[in-house]
Amino acid sequence: MAILPAARTAVSLPAREEDEVTRLKRREHAAWTAVFEREHPLVFRAVLAQVGDRTVAEDITGQVFLEAIEGIGRYRDRGRPIAAWLLAIARHRAHDWFRRRRREQGVAIEPSTEGPETALDVALEALSALTPEQREVVVLRFVEGYSLDETAGLTGRSTGAVKALQHRALARLRAVLGEDATWSYR
Amino acid sequence: MKNPLTRDYPLPTPEDEAFASDTFAPLCHERMDDSVVARWRGAIVNALAITPAARYGPARKVAMSSAAVVAPLMAVSAVGALTGQDELAAPIDLMGDLANSMGTLVNDATPVASPVANASTTPTASGTPDPSSTASATSTATGTATAIPSGTAVAGAGAAAVAPHENGLGCDDILFANGHMQGGPVGCEVGNSADHRQNGWKNATATATATATPSPSATATASATAVSPHENGKGCDDVIFANGHMPGGPVGCDVGNSGDHRQNGVKNATPTASATGTPAVTTSSTGSTNPGQGKNNGGNGNSKKP
Image (cartoon, rainbow over all chains, first blue to last red):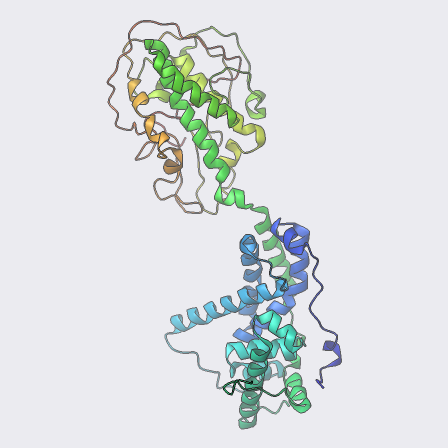
């Protein structure tokens, strides 16, 4: 049985109004505001887990919604939550940021040699040891508290793929956190 | 039968889940700063305020097409009436009907319902020659011609541009007068004058279109020969963004008769025809025409931004 923090055990996909996409496509201000207020924490944390930088994550999160507004006309409603689409945009923007940063720096990004100072730093350092796909699954499963099926729906993967990513991510985390004695946050 | 190549990954043990949950617990409480949220909220509102129609401008293409196509045709019509070539009247009427079906007045001198135009329009009696309209017609037709029946030409151009105002998709939307909403930093001025109004309706002080007395040395044939490019899709749509001005681009856009090429293909047109006779071309426009209007629609090369 899964053990999740009490605050996150009740988390589930938000109930979506049937006509929400229609209202979004009509560019209704109220609909977009509601989506932004509801989804921006999720998007922000997902991006933060990817890029590890708060300021960058805030910028990318806002851009995700602007891009969503611009692209809502091309959105096809396949019954998946709107958050899945927003997370996909966020994934691409985070990937773009990594590419741009690598290009600007000319070298691959090296993990910081400084030890983490806070619990958040520990978490972000641990996430940096994972692949982007593993990070996404880990965040949705253990930060947002989604189930395997819900995570599969949000990431557009099968449940089996999510299980595999989760399994490898946890194995990697155990190895990384076990190697570093300074990571005492456990 | 189970595929031997697939692997069934076990679910994490409770200890694994507890470990992962504790490790990433600090991330659960991370949120964007309120100031940042407010900033993006405002950005979203602004983004919603820019409609796709304003961004990509389908309405403006239609409006520009109708006005700029009809204007030179009016000149041709005038020439036809002037020279007695009735065969010109048929296609002009056809185009007139077409333009009317698009909500564009074409030289029928019906009182204009445009709120913009009416605001400053004072109808005067028809049949009064207006010297200033002669100058406008000259500009409209060919840029060099002086014999196009001025009243007719001006009336056609001016009336053609009025109708799009009626449904809110007219010149105001076209011109992006206040700030050029398409994203580019440069204002886009369409038409012939002022900071908006493609046909100079902004400060229109109306004069009725009058009976004109064209001079016989007309070069309006240049306009007549320039009509055909519109018919095969080389009309205003091609002209509008002709020189690199894509929506959102930094380059201003002059629509009408300026620039390196002409919507009517008459940029370098050499006047070849001459109108003879002194026909009295009379239009019956009642108060919707303007001496300055339409002088850039369909003519040749002399107008730039104000």
